[in-house]
Image (cartoon, rainbow, N blue to C red; front, side, top):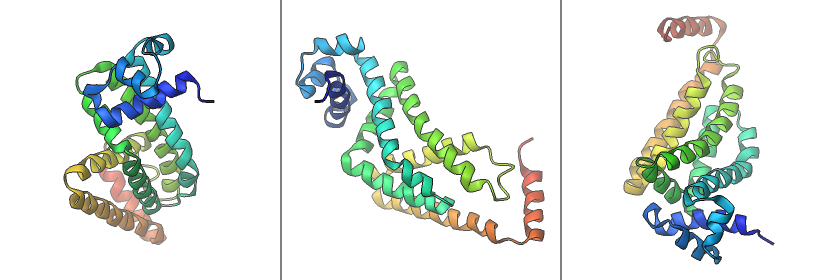
Length: 209
């Protein structure tokens, strides 16, 4: 049987999905969960704390679903393919709408911003693991700042997800451009020793000091 806490966590996400951040309250969440609204405060102390817990819990659940797919990734293009799959799945179940609402609310609410950042950090840590493995044997391994690169990848996909709501074709073009970039980076793996040394020297000269 689902516990009251779990029902409230699920209801918080569903309320964001259906009512938007402006419509989130103890009353609307409790109505969605079909419980007394006093239980919001009993279990979580405040609506903000419930939203924070719901963000991280929902994100952790989604990561568990795709972790095995991440483990199979062997190149940047394969990472992009997984990203496309995840993007389609997230949009189908309405999670892109939830993300948009959280990001909108985070602009003026430090507590919500902190909760949203914590949830996004769960994704970037997963991406760091994949990127370290994928780039380990490439000329970029010694120069890539993996934590920053993971955040850049996450930010790119978030931007594309939000962009698609206004311009689906433009979002598709952006994903195709990333795919082309991944194909270019894969060429590095086929370079001979001389070309690899030349590339390393070039990257070393242009890398930030």
